[in-house]
Structures are given as structure tokens and as C-alpha cells.
Length: 444
Image 1 (cartoon, rainbow, N blue to C red):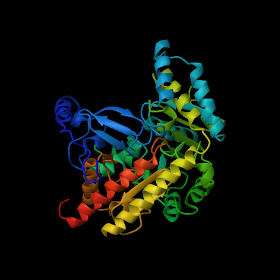
Image 2: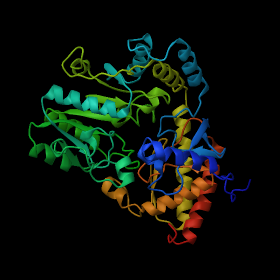
Image 3: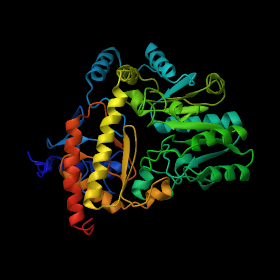
Image 4: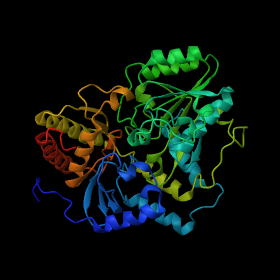
């Protein structure tokens, strides 16, 4: 098949029929808003199966996947060791509602990889993890306010749905109905990479701020790296003011290296949240930190948090199988090298097509922003041409390349992507960008 031929050859009749049924019974036809493709247009995907770096829709079309279940599938779809572990555990039971040794085993792997997490609590989603970490910070400090950064997304708990990135940015929702104003007022939003603004809100709210929560490398406004000394500054400001620093590594944990990115960025959080990769594609998340803080969580302390399916044995087996494979020598370097080839190739194709864009990248994470100016925070990201991104998304999808259906998300290169995959992606990008350039952005 030549690079000029669209790879989605089969008409999507089955997918269309399934989505029509979904719209009648699921809200918007989906169980997470970005899956509706509202910001990029076209028909939402209905996926039947996945294998390695590929997805197959209900009509049998093959897609090269760079969404990777929003980063969770670092080892690809249907990883043999993970699938075998889940199948084996299913024979022994899927949920008990009491502790298993599997929970201890996964917790040990995580705390060995991230030694400053002395104690950990498993939950079932990243939202649960961040929500619980904030509750713990408020309980420990006896303060109510939190500081978060515009465009950073920490899940859909009430405290976070103000000036959030990811889903809210994708849907164009500025404020979320249903969040009480009194609660929203307890969240202080400042621009990412802006230490003076952080210092100002602490000065204006002396002895009221329980915690600062931050993505160490933002990935929910698109990928935005911290400026020099930004994170170290947050560490110093929070300590000086008696507040806790919560580092949200739901995306970055085990993504760029085996363990936390905090080591490479020169900081240590009071509390850290994890998710996605630690579950091997099964719903798992966690929060943890110093024992003196975690001991405030029930049953040892008064800060209550619980979950029927927390520490679910299927999830624990999947997570253990995933983390054991991530210790393979050179795995992270190989992913980073492939991602760099992709980024350099995309920059070249964008320049050749004469289309202004920025590509922010670190390790196996990247985002193409269709803007001429550098992107250092959410304000910069919002200046991107989202209509052009939508056109690029559709052109790439027509050629069998599945990118995030949102300008404000990341491209994830996994351990199962290959050099041939990168070459195929760049060939598709060349054709897609040439088509966009030929239309001069009119047909978007």
C-alpha cells in the first residue's frame, strides 16, 4: 500500500450503528467526554480489540495508536504477560473486599522504585488519588485552601474543576455547573511556570493554604515542561508557608523512567499520586508519601477514605506484571529515541509545509501545538489553532494514525512502537500537512 492511500478502507457501518445505539443509552454515547470527538469532528471510534501498538475498530480498520489509553498502555495492548496474569487471577477470584498479599507486592515494587513514598494507599482512579491527597493535606494542616495551576488537570473532583486542562479545555467548558461556589473559592488558580504568582497568593492567604498540587511535567494542557527552578521554587514556598506539596504523577509516574520524575527534576513531594501505568491497563491509582503524613489516613488516623474495589486482585496482578517488565535495561532510552525521531520528523514536515507550530516534548511525551509562539502555560496553549488541529487529527486518522482527539493532550510513544511505525506516521503527516497547506487553512 502506498503512503498516499488512506488506510481506513472499510466503511464504518458497524461503528456507526453501535454509536447510534450508544447515544440512546450512554450519556453522549460515551463514558468520558473526549471520546465523543466533539472538538475534532467526525465519527467517534468504536474499538473492538487492540494488539501491541495497534487498535482495530468494529469494522476491522487498523489504527496505529498514539493515545495508548491516555498513557496507561506503555507496554502496548494485550501484553502477553499482563493478559496471562489477569487470566490466572480470574481463576482464583476477582474481588474479595479484604486484603491480599498482591497489594503488598505491588506496593513494595512502587516504594522500592520511589523510596520517598514510605506508605501508600491504593484507589481505583487518578481522580480518587488526587482527591484523597488533597483531603489528607487539609486534614493534616487544618487549612482549607489549595493552589493549583491553570491547565493542569487532576481529575474531576469538585476542587479541581476550575481553570482545568484536558477534558474541560477540550470541551470548552470554563466553569463546571454543580460545583458550589463556596467550594470553588477554596481553589486558588495561578499560571503554570509562574513563581511570583504563587508567592502572591500565599501572601494574600497567609496560613490558609493547605497544599500546592502540580503536574511536574504538565500533560493535560498538552505537554509543557517546568521552567528552570519552578518546581524547586514550589517546594521552597510550600515548606516556608507550612503547606504540603502534592505532585500529581498519574501520567508521569513510570512514564519517563522507572519510578518518579521527581528525582530527575530535583524535588521530593510531601504526597505523590500515581495511576495509569501502575495498573497495566486495569483501573489502579494510588497516593502516598511520608509515613508521618499517611498515618493520618483511616484506620490509623481521622482522615477517612475507603473503596470497595481498592486493591482489587485483578488490578494488582496486572500492575505487578507491568512494573516487572519496565525494569528491562534500555527500555526507556529506546522509547525516548523513537519519540525524538517522531518529533524531529514532525518539525521538519511542518516547516516544509509552511505551517506554524510548536512541538513540546520530553522523553516519550509530546504535543503538536498549532501556534507560532512558544507554549509555556495554559494561556499560551489556548492560543493554538484548534480547528487546524482538528483537521490534522482527521487527516491522520484517515491514514490510519490515531492521535489524541484533542489539542490539549499528549502523544504517547510506547515500548512496542517501532522504527517502521515512526516512518509510517511521518509519511502520513507529510500528506496530511500538505493537504492542510494546500487548502490554506480554509477547510478546517
